[in-house]
Image 1 (cartoon, rainbow, N blue to C red):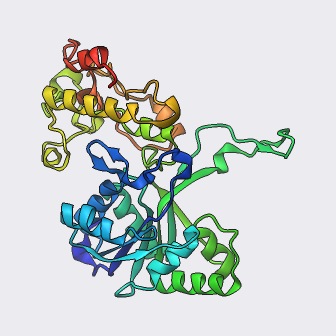
Image 2 (cartoon, rainbow, N blue to C red; image 1 turned 90 degrees about the vertical axis):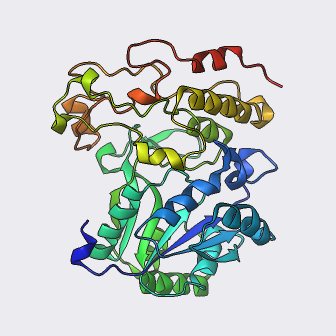
Length: 355
């Protein structure tokens, strides 16, 4: 988007971090669990802080957690865009309503779950482009699995057409006046059968909501298994691999990790940094309660840049509605170097001893 050709509207991000995390099975709320050396909440706040689209952040926390968040997260990491920290409510919609009450200026409002740490600038930009045209939009991705409608006896009643099904994520972005009107009407009715903000706008105002493309990695940390899935890959180098894959420039995406991003992660993009990351990950895995942290899935550990080859065929790109191109963009996150030699990080996994 060329924002020089248009005046950008004021954008507020309301980040929800008031959940108790009951499904995590821990005494620590999920948004404060450590992931890669930082609280889960840190990552979405950092993305909004650094975004050129976001002007203000309102953080909604659990009861009696405002001071903790101010000192240990907002001040600790210098999140200067956080203008208010407010207490959430009993349900998600109560927390959103509390956040809406303190927005400084009208414009657009991004509602985002603090337990979704993998939001990025691309999602924020696509949301802005979409909401400018529709006044109401939500991130989502086409479902990959077959979905069944099941009755109370766990018998299949029907199978919806997968082509019509999208898994909805956050952020969910709206014209501020529109969302305030919808939530105001909801609060007067005290109707609590809503699961996201789009549903409030749909049901209360009969307003159409547009879906834009999020990303599959934009998961919500809800269960111990989610936390394990979230900690699965780490770059070991910023050395480019164009000479290995031998793809035309228009056919390659380039590197998964740009050199400029190295300063924004707690572990350096080196072989040593990858080792430290994996050790930290294994320590997190060990903390998963109820002995559930028994293993993990590492994303593309053996991905090597191969001449003329990419991560997807034209048919699979069409199926997942991905424009491409399809280079070897995860090669620098593997556990083997570009020549196929094992990296020291494999020894970290092999030799790790639980405490």
